[in-house]
Image (cartoon, rainbow, N blue to C red):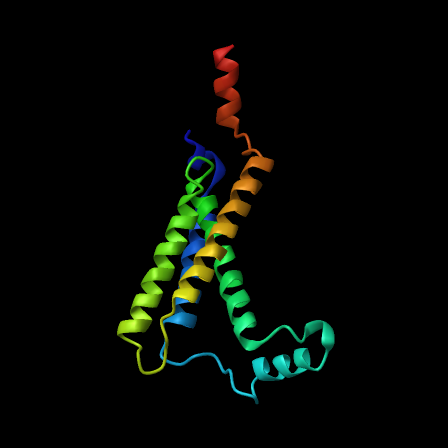
Length: 157
């Protein structure tokens, strides 16, 4: 069996597809999540601003941290899907997916969305972090042995 076959079943791919659809629903629809003062985000930012320890959390910083956080699971699941030898494809696919989102927002959704280089950078950073986490998990936990693997080893002896 190959590295990918031993480490993964259909679960990482299925989760990656579902998570990709989730990101698409958030980023490729005409309406942005509510960011006004009477929204959950607005109330949270007011709460952060009221405390000295969290006053540094401005809307711009929360948005950038959110972009990084949104793509960490994408890179992680992609790395698990591609396996130990090709984990870095989680980073590459994350960057490509982010570029496609920004291009779509900049060409089709120009009335309500904004394509920015900072979104591309933060999304790609998140995918890279996720892919590295996937690599670390695959390196820390070796693949499970199956009965067929044990039989092959015994037959070889």
